[in-house]
Structures are given as structure tokens and as C-alpha cells.
Image (cartoon, rainbow, N blue to C red; front, side):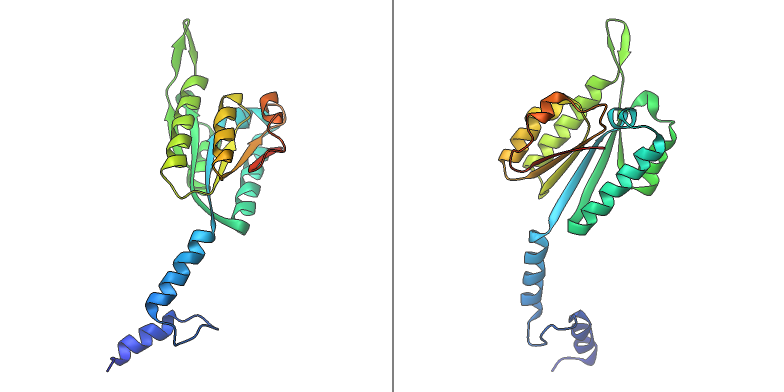
Amino acid sequence: MESSILTNLKALEIAPGESTNESLQERERRKYQERRKQRRFYIFLDYSNFLGALESEEQFFEELKNLENEIVKVGTIEFASAYIPSNRFNEAPIMFLSNVLDYEIIGCSLQTSGGVLKNADTVDMKMERKIWAMMFNSNVTDFVIITGDADFQPGTVWIGRHQKKVLILSGKRALSTRYRQLEGLDNITIKEV
């Protein structure tokens, strides 16, 4: 005979409309199957590229909030990361990304190229490595790559061919023409703001 505490706990687990005859194991299996069907997103943000392609910081904030609102209508954001050159850490949008939108901030050190400090190479390299790692080692169904940088075009095609969806989000002033060649391919969407 079950204790009244156990009976009450089981009753709390039953959602309206569910059968009380369904075992806990059956219910957990069904919930697991439902979670597997849900779309899971990973957002990669090339901070300097996206911010530089927009009209203002306000547009930057607005576009990222709109993106998140659209995603949560169809799935969950499993992880979001922003790749930021180390010389830009003191900018206000970084705090917004970290504290409001809960992005992981990935610092990218500057490299010297011919006596000139350059940030693009380390940002691209770190983003690309993480994209490939997530492609092979995660249950992510959708990749959102926020950049206009053509360096990610081959990876975008590869991800799409492996039955995962890719959204490239870019400012109109930053979208590489190489992405235009991808329009119409299955699993790949290009959006300019």
C-alpha cells in the first residue's frame, strides 16, 4: 500500500487531461520524446561585425531581443555566445549581452599582423571551432550565426547538409555576397536587418 505522501506526489505530476493510469515511467518516456522533438538553438554572435553593420546600439539591442522572441516561439535557446575582441570589453552592449540576454562572453585576443593589431582572425577562429564542436557533440537542431563574414559560408553549407537548420543574421552593410549564393538551399536561411 502506498503512503499518502507518495500518492499526493504522483497526483501533482499529472497534468490536466492526463490519465492517472499512465505510469510514471510511461509519462517520463513521453516527456522525453516530446523534448527530443523540440527545436534547440545555439546562437553565435560576431559582436564587432554585427554591431558595426547596424545603424545604432539601439538597433543592435532591438534585433537581438526580436531574435530571441522568435526563437522561443518554436523552441529553446540552449546556449548563446558572443565573440568579442579584447579591446572592446568596456562597451555598454557587452553588459546587455551578458546580464540581460545571458550570452557567454568569449574574449578574443588581438593578433599582430605586419605591425598592426587585428581582431578579426581570432574571433573567426574561435567561433568556427565552437561551431564545429557543437555540430558534432550536441543535440542542437538549429544554428544561428550572427555575422556577415564570408569565412563561415563553407561551415554553413556543411551544417545544412547534415540536416540541421542554419540562420545567418546580418546587417545589410555587412552581408558578404557569398551568402547570397546559398539562398534557396535546404536548411539555410539568410536574413538581413
